[in-house]
Image 1: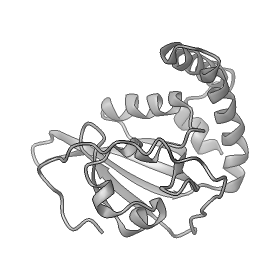
Image 2: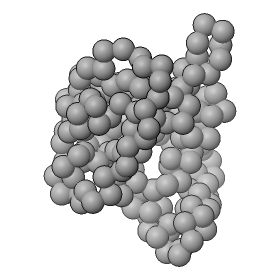
Image 3: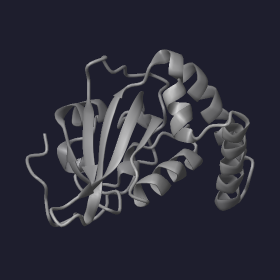
Image 4: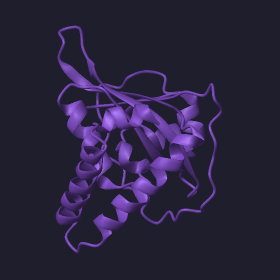
Length: 187
C-alpha cells in the first residue's frame, strides 16, 4: 500500500501502449473497494492494496503515473470527458468503467470520483472509490459504450470522434429524459 502522500510529483510514466487486452476479466468481490487518489493533473498519489493487486502494477510503477495508465481501449473517450467535466466543476460523479491490467486482463468497476480539498478548501486532487460493477448494469452499459466507441473510431480526427460520441450520448440521455448521473443510478 502507498505509505504516504508524496509532495513531489514524479515524472509521468509512459503508458504501456504495447499491452494488448487478453479478454480475461478479473472480477471484484461484492465487498471489495478500490481506492486511489490523484493530483489535479490525474497523476496517482495514492492507492490501496487492492488497487495495486488488481492492476498488476507495482507501487513504484503507479506512484506518479497518470491514472490513464489503466485505460482500456474499449472505454469511450466521451465517458472520460463527462467524468473530467464533473470533477473539474467541483462535482462528484458516479460512472462505470473498464480498466486494463498490466498483463492485459480487465476489470469493470462502478466508480465514485470526487474532488479532494485541503484545510483551506483549495482543490488539491481527486479521490476515487471503485466497487464491483453489477452484472445487470453492465448488460446496458457495455452495448452503450460499444456504440459510443464505434462512433469515435469512425472519425480520422480524434477531436471529431469525441464530439460525435458526446453528441450521441447526449441524444440518448435526452431521449430517456435523464442525465448521465440519473442513468447510472437507474441501472
